[in-house]
Amino acid sequence: MRKNAKYNVKVEMFLKNHEFLAPKRYSYAQVGKITRSFKVKLGKGGFGTVYKGVLRNQNQVAVKVLNEVKGNGEDFINEVASVGRTSHVNIVSLMGFCLEGRQRALIYEFMPNGSLERFIYNQSSSSSSQLGWEKLHQIAIGIARGLEYLYRGCSTRILHFDIKPHNILLDNDFCPKISDFGMAKLFREKESKISVSHMRGTPGYIASEIFSRNFGEISHKSDVYSYGMMILEMVGGRKNIEVRVDNTSEIYFPHWIYKKVELHDEQLGLSEIVSEEENRTARKMIIVGLWCIQTNPLTRPSITKVLEMLEGDVASLEIPPKPYISSPSRCVGSPSTDSLHDTL
Image (cartoon, rainbow, N blue to C red; front, top):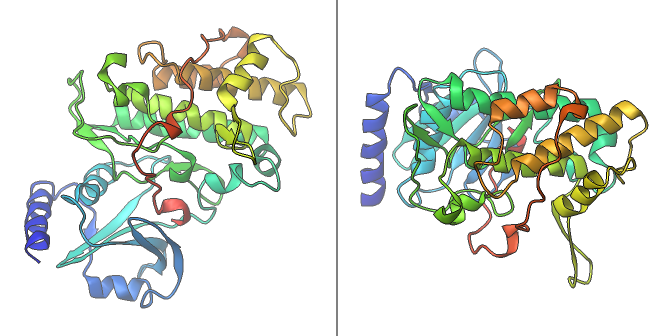
């Protein structure tokens, strides 16, 4: 109880200082009414449980009821602080929040198509056959625009630190929206070096400089790395590292597809490519992804440059150096940080 009281004082102080940015505040009783006594459960994970709800204006929402406070509760403050100050078509909208004693909840716009993860990891069919290459390309562009807004469009810059398919939500028209800002860090425009107190992100998407400063400084290029890994998974329709059934061998997709691109192989070995236009789209996304996952952050493009490449002609793109560090998913002891927003 003492821990919760101390935490609540901290959050209340933050909300008081940022009152003009914070979304609408709801009581826990109101949260109960919105969710019809928590009737429809959409998902459950390490941070809490997500329920479907309806506001008084009949707008559908997803209500994430958080577990008891862990650590200093930074994830809750991060969500309210970061998403509360954003307004962009490719960023999920935080409609409100609840902080009442030990009860905490975050209320988001409802996303009927769930997460991008649902479409690209479906083993029964490839991502391209579900969404089509043009739609995948537009989703990649939308996510990049959302990231560019976080870095350049906000008065206070925001680093997300957990870009992955699980945290990309799709609306009715499959317009992508970046979600889950629990690991986000806010910084001033003039800050050139960003410090973090602990490891942030999900293994397999974490940039090398977050593991060790020997690789470079943490910056928006760290999110660019995660974005690149995600783009390659969208193209491949699977996790970048694939363990064989007998667990004795692995296929690391970025290295496998790099060989195809490096040799200018016209047949990329990807399913559902039925036209030259689709082949150009896939090749463009692959080259952009490979540039984004360069080990040296200085070699990676800015997110603005990423947009320029995605919207330009594939013939003008240079093939990047081969990424020489394999997936860190097995060499990091940090636990998975899957969020709950796949059904928001």
